[in-house]
Image 1 (cartoon, rainbow over the protein chains, first blue to last red):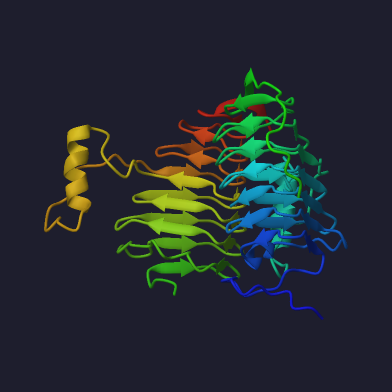
Image 2 (spheres, rainbow over the protein chains, first blue to last red):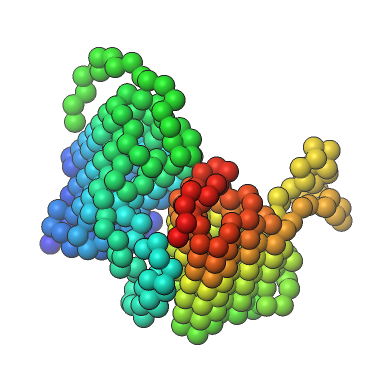
Length: 200
Length: 175
């Protein structure tokens, strides 16, 4: 059995078997898997040269899959997935951003009563999914500012920027700056040639 | 270590290293938690005179409760990651008073008292669902069964069984 602990990890856990780290990818702490429940063999894939810093949390349901692209940088991002979240290459996602493909709880308070009663009996106390998840796709080279929320079913197009504290409730086209709560397109971004051709 | 003036009900669990790190209350029964609730990595930042009540079967994950005065939360309430409730401005709005406040808060304070700071109770009724990154500010009452969408900033009362969204939060639907 290979050692799946990391010497710099304050939490002192192990990287779960179904988490694949690409070449040179950096993971700050295994505490990020405290809420990881996915049993898929390909549950989490972190691209080569990607960085996943402290405060990130992979809050996955039993059948969830999360893919993080090459050279992506995630700092304190909360990923709530019951189906799938895909984050493209070179994406930048800032602190306290919540990206979720499910709201987990149903809108009906009576139905939530039953689920909350059940949660109190489970060990550990985790919610079961009461609603259909809807996958989220963050395309390549997207930059998401701090404290944003990205809600289920959303796709953010390549090269776009989401301003701090925005709440993204619908798709954002490629090469667009969007901001606000709920987020709206503010202006377009020029589609230019990539700078130095860096490959992971 | 759970402070002595905190009461935790049957089958209620408080998990997390930082839960009581900012607990300063000296009042009796400063925090009373009901039964069967789950408080995972909840930040109980309770000021010197703060008083917090939470009902039964609540489920809070990584929520932040900033309570200098009075926060009352019902039963079957859900709070998501990084959701915040604050019952105070924590500092005066008026610039001159803020200067005095900075001095009174500093290591040079001596026996200087802080200037008056606006505080108003927050009431979250039963069955409310507060999404991640949402903020509930002082003086707000959120009615039973209401849904506060992710990232909403709630500055005024929310009626029962509505959905609110945005900053400032507005009603966008009914439940």
